[in-house]
Image (cartoon, rainbow, N blue to C red; front, top):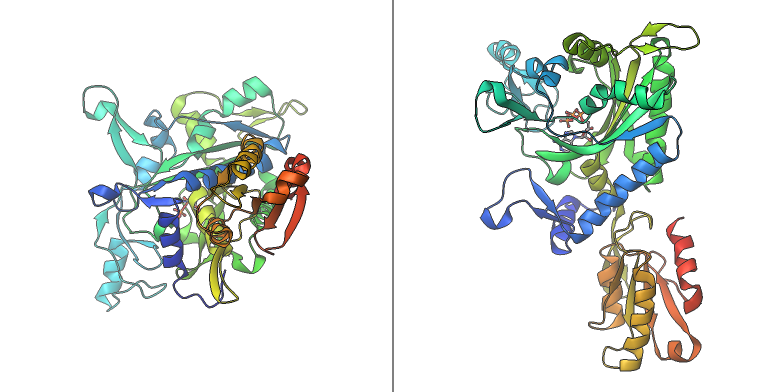
Length: 444
Ligand code: ATP
C-alpha cells in the first residue's frame, strides 16, 4: 500500500471499474446501493481467493469437511438460531464506525445532551426497526406461513447438517465443517465500496470441540487466520486483533475477537470475526427440531453437545484488503506505472502473450502457438495493440505477473522474452520449457 496515498480508495474503485474487476450493480438503471457485479477479472480474483481458502482449510487438513448448503432454509432455523427474535430492536447506527445502538439507550443519553456516537463521535442514522434479514415467500401465496429468509450467515446450514456429517463420516472431535457461500443482509449504512454489501460471500468454519478446550482452540484459530492472511501477501503491520466487550457480543457468543485490517478508508476495521459460539446453536436446534444433535464419544460413551469455535471470513473484505495492499504507483524514468502486486497464485491473469509486431504473419503464428500452449494451463491474455511498453503497463495495472514477447529471434531460436512484473527483469526462456518455468513461479 503506498504510504502517501490519500485517495487510494478512489483510485482502487476507479481502476476496478475501468479494467473490469468490479462494476456498480444495476449501473445503467442508476444503481442499487451496496450492490456490485464482478467483471471478468473480478470473478477470477474472487475464485482464486475462494480456491486458496478451500485448499488451505479443507483440502490441506484431514479434520475439516466441506459442505454447500442452501440459501433458502426452513424459517424455523432462524427462530432456533435467535435471528428472528434477536434483530427486531429499534436501532440507530453510527454512520462512521457502523456500531449499532438501541435507540432507547441513545435517547437516554440524548436527554443528557449526547447526540453523537459515544465511541467515535459520528452522526447517527434515523432510528429504524432493524431486521437485517431479507424476507421472501415460498410458493404462490404470500402469507405468513410461506415466509422464508435469505440467509444472513452461512453458519446455520452447517449446524443443521451436523448430524448428517456425523452419520456419513463418523468424525472424532475436534473436527470442523466448512462452507463458502452467499449471505444477505439488509444493511442500513452505505458501505465503503465492497466492504459492506447487501449480498456477499462468507467463508466459514464451525470447529467442534470439547468445552474445556475452547481457549486452546480459540488461540490456535487466531494463528491459523493470521497465517492465511499473511500468506495472501499482506504485511503483518496492517492487521491487528480486537476483543469484543460484553455489550458488543452477538447473542450466541461468549467471546469474540475481530481481526482488523488497516483499510485505506478510515483505518483499522473488521476484516473477519472469530467467535466462541459455545453449544448455543446445536442445543437450540436440538430443542426446536426435536432431533438429537448430541455427539457420542465412542471411547468414554459420553454424550454431549460439542462447543464450537467459528472463524468467519468475508470474501469481499479479503478482496478489498488485497487491492489495498497490492496497489502501487511508481515513477519509471519519465513515466508513471500503476501496478497491482498480487501474489502470482491469486492474480486473475497469469501471463500475457505479445507478438512484437502485429503485422508480421510469422510472428503472429508463433505467438498464437505460445498463447495456445499456455491458455489451456491457466488464464492467459493476448495483446497485439500499441507498443510493447504500453502493453506491459496495461498488464501491470491488472496485476499480471508475467508478460511474454515473441520476436524475430523466437522464430530462429524457439525462445521468448519473459518479463517479471515487479522487478521488470527480462530473461530468455525456451518455448518448450516455458510452461514448466511459469508453473513453478506461479506456485511460489
Ligand atoms: P460489521 O460489524 O462490519 O457489520 P459483522 O460483525 O456484522 O460485521 P459478522 O456477522 O461477524 O460481521 O460476519 C462475518 C464476516 O462476514 C465479517 O467479518 C465480514 O468479513 C463479512 N461481512 C459481514 N457483513 C458483510 C457485508 N455486509 N458485506 C461484506 N462482508 C460482510
